[in-house]
Length: 168
Image (cartoon, rainbow, N blue to C red; front, side, top):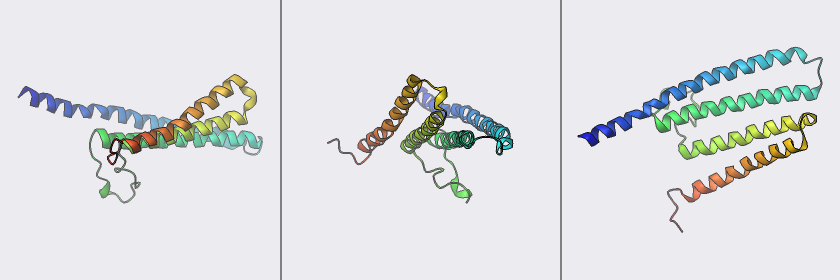
């Protein structure tokens, strides 16, 4: 009887993750506010600034969009994988991946998103190279390369440890 009660408690504890996902929803709203603020700041400058500056500002918007998409992936995939199922059949406008991505897929999407975000950030830094030392740029490139190499290694590890792997 004690064991059954402990199992029920452990199973119910998954609902403690919900506040984390709700906090991510609030973070998503904060990213939207930051995006609108960024847009309001740079749109009036369209005719009075250099194209390079405009590209830097647009890259910032792209960066924010990637991060927001990453947050959405974590919210829905985490909820589905760790808390409860999602009734995706009720809505026609749900993205195809929603409700279908497993933990492995989540990790790979996260890694891909991190590489994309890192790429954009690195591009922004190289377009504004005068504000960074050689040492800073080398660290940025090194960290980006770690992300780039980690992605395929993670995918390979997942493939080798998948259900079809016979241990050979």
